[in-house]
Length: 218
Image (cartoon, rainbow, N blue to C red; front, side, top):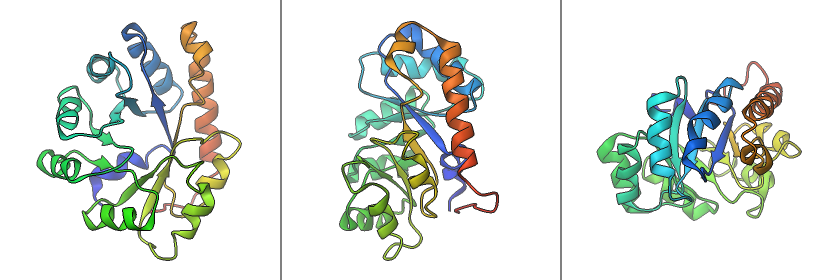
């Protein structure tokens, strides 16, 4: 696997973050990093997402910042200019493939069917975002893809939580999982950053405990 993709495997949980208020961006990211979750996906679902990414990229030491919900080439270049070191999309298209190739920024493209996986891997992308995981067959679907696609790795997101995390991370073709359960709205609204750090620590510890030491998955 290309070394530029190891960021997706350094920590087995990738928080999926929607920043509603710009002033929350830096303390929220700091709280997650303090809890051991360093690979962060900030989604383009809010008006302040680009500004939030710039703040995190410039001020949060230890954060590996990525951008999610990217669907166009112009968005791709916008988030890279905002400091994103990787880009995540719920799907894929030639625009995104081209932007990743032109910039050298890793793309995590979305795919949930065999034909989609073939298109993504045929374009040279080694890891697939399996989204929405819960409504697309969950861990059973990803497990079934091991047969026809033995070299493809997956990162499921969408409906991943502490109760089903083990079913995903136990699969040899899953390298990490994305979720937002460590970011409950009540804690964010109350700016309870120590509470976020506690949940991040618990998520990191849980995920690490589910991986056997010899399981590199690469």
